[in-house]
Length: 445
Ligand code: 2IT
Image 1 (cartoon, rainbow, N blue to C red):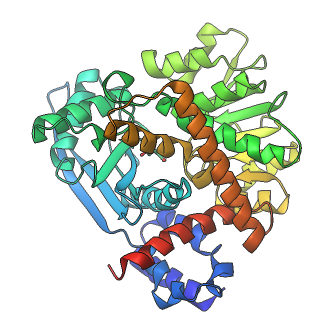
Image 2: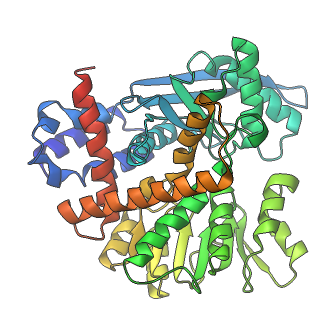
């Protein structure tokens, strides 16, 4: 390992020893940057690696709210303002009980490079709270969002920091957050949040964007082998926003999605998953996917099981970090998988990624493949700034162009510095170089 990389890793590990997922994300990126160091001595001269591993600002705050049972709760909230070198901090809010500083920082770090890859003017950030939305009443969710925004509002702004949704935060939560922001600031600052509902400033196709983008990226990878998604047998993990719209687009394009999952287990439907039922369960009934079997009697549900042992051609991890490990990778490879495309952030463990690389399997890395969501968030900001509302077709067309551009960046840098299909290395190098060049222009800040 190059001494500068080793030394940076050592410093970052010492500083953040209690944050294993953050360290995993850092290691994954900076160990692929070795081939560019010789050509760009300024990276070491200006200590860009270490600077990029340290967030510009990290906010931890207390969120006090009352549950329907009358009890007062104190929840921890976060906003990591990782990098503003390419634009306002941009990234989602995650409401989930397992959220902590390390998770926030890993997501913020990934977001910097992902946002850079989109080619748009957005910096990187992430936030959230250790809040369990499942099982909460609508009123409780509203009170929590209002309490959360009572602190967050002082840190954000359409030219400062623009949050959006992530796990546990959808259009409903964005609505409550926006209402409270407006009340506190007495400003209708449309571009302060993205992922808004379409009736009051949201962009058409934002909801679909991450999942659709994952599929557009997949199409580009398959094209290099003269193939398409049509007729392919597919498994998807997760049943949230990313998984749902990935399944919808894949089905539209003639693939057969036979399995998906959530935290309770795996759903298997040989005829092809009926995406409208999954959507209804998530958005209307707010139930786990097990209830799908009430709608389709020939589907089966396996409690607690992972999805990865279902034989398939294409696999899409769209649930959460480290959900697919080395053992799962081996099972997928033994079952003849051709392609993995990451919809979630960092869903594959390092040994899973290594196994796919060694087996020559097409691999779409998250920070490239799932960048469609944040890219359309940036298009939402653009529409808000221009007081415009683009059609679904327009946004979808822009999204396709962005995903194709990201893919060609990944290919270009993979070919130049790694191996031609190492899109993970290509994505890291492409994302890194744009951030690095802007940092150099801005001087020592
Ligand atoms: O992980 C992600 O890219 C997101 N949660 C979307 C962030 C955004 O600002 O739309």
